Length: 75
Image 1 (cartoon, rainbow, N blue to C red):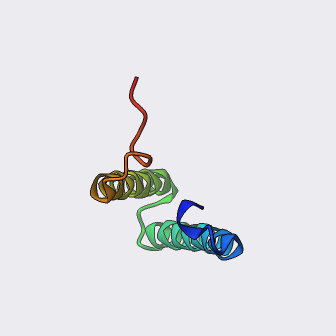
Image 2: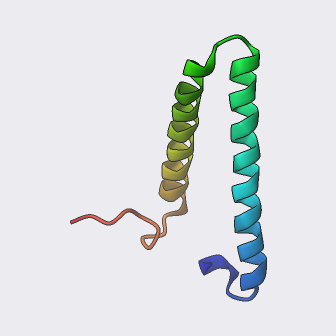
């Protein structure tokens, strides 16, 4: 919402859209894992890999922005 002060409804819509894209991609990856014969037990592993990738992308983005408000809090 920080970057969309002039259009908060648009930012909210984009946020919901990104959530739905994430749901669709997660379902597609899970289905692909099963379809390729890796079995149901491999789906959580694929989900963990996606979560780690998302975390890495988030951390890289925070470092590149240089905005101290976006940096993780330190105690």
